[in-house]
Amino acid sequence: MKAVVFDLNGTLVDDIAYHFAAFKALAAKVGFAMDEAIFQSTNGQKNADLFPRLLGREVGPGFLDTLANEKESMYRTLYRPHMAPVKGATELFARLRDRGIKLAIASSAPDENRTMVLEGLGWSTAFDAVILPHDLPGKPAPDIYLAAAKTLGVEPTECIAFEDAVNGVKSANGASMLVVGVTTNVPGDTLREAGAQLTIADFTAPELDELLASHGL
Image 1 (tube, rainbow, N blue to C red):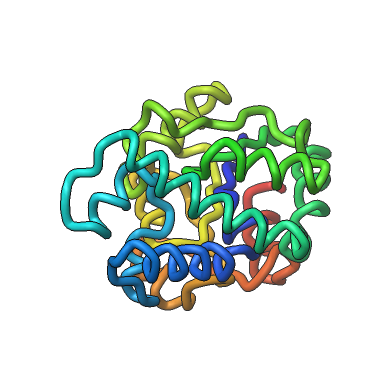
Image 2 (cartoon, one colour):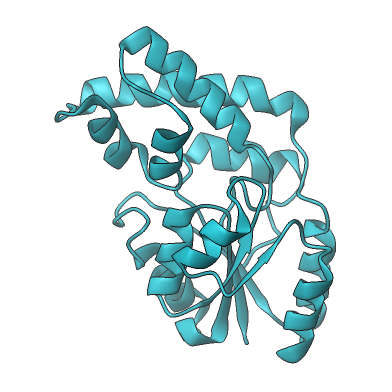
């Protein structure tokens, strides 16, 4: 293995409950259905893909921006006071760096959300690449993970991907990466059914240590 590619929300930070709360508040205001099952079916997707699904119709760019800005602003307000890395994340970065492994972020998060987390946790320079989702098909399409591998100059089969959502696991699996599911948000069985080869509660899991060691990491 030559590279590790991380999703961000729900994977490196345990913030999905705050996204869900923001979606529920917006749903009550705008008038679309939102429950755990609906939320999980859209988790990991870009706003441009998920809002037409939620509303059941095409959404013009102006209204899409209004919906997205309100939801994401609410999420940032809710989560900012609680921002923290998933246990063991920072130590994992150091371990991988010591072994010459390249690191990347492959997240569908809007720019403001991603910046808040990376700057807030001191991770602005922690990654060799941060793949922006703007011109790429959203997860579960594999494009963002393929773009991460290409940007890092490695083959997708030389990468380990970490994901918390079904759509994200399918995306990384579709890119032929070895996928580790992080169970902050979805049960391990569900992530394994989606294609995760291993599931962990956080980055201190002994199973992860064994997996990394088996690949010389």
